[in-house]
Image (cartoon, rainbow, N blue to C red; front, side, top):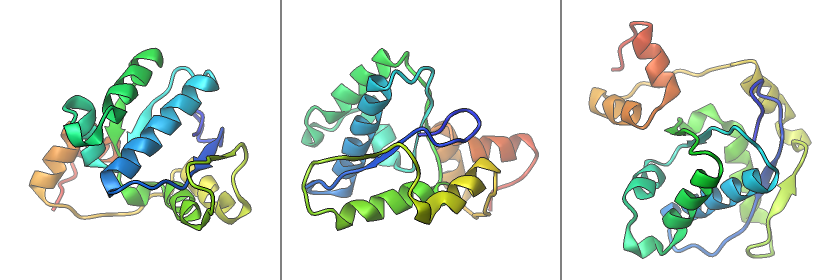
Length: 164
C-alpha cells in the first residue's frame, strides 16, 4: 500500500492453503481491502496483475465461494474505488512479498509490515520515482488489459504508442 506519492503505507504477506492461484489472488485482494478499510485509507485505488480476479469480481465463479462477494462488499465500504489491472513486472515489491509468504511456517497468519523490508527498499524507491520497464504484448491482449483499466497501456495509447 502506497500513498499518492508512492511512499510506503503498509504491506503484508500471509501463507495460505489455497487450492489454486486465483483463490490465492482473491484472498490477497480480500485481505488488502480489509486492511485498507481497517486503517481507514480513503480514497484508495486498487491494482492487481490477475485478470482472473478482475473477472471474478464482476462475475463470481461459484467455485471461489464468497470471496468475490466479500471483496465487492469491501470495495463498496471503501467508496467503490477503481479496480485496475497492472503488469506483474510493474510492482516487484508485491512479487517480493508473495515470495516471503512461501517462507512463512504459520498458515493464515498475516505478517503486516508498516515499513518496507530492507531487501526491497531500493525497489520501493524505484517505483516511487517511476522507473519503468518495457513489455511487448499482442493487440488483443492490449485491448483486454485496457478494458481492465491498465494505466500503463492507457497512457501509452494516449501518447500514440502501439502495442506489438
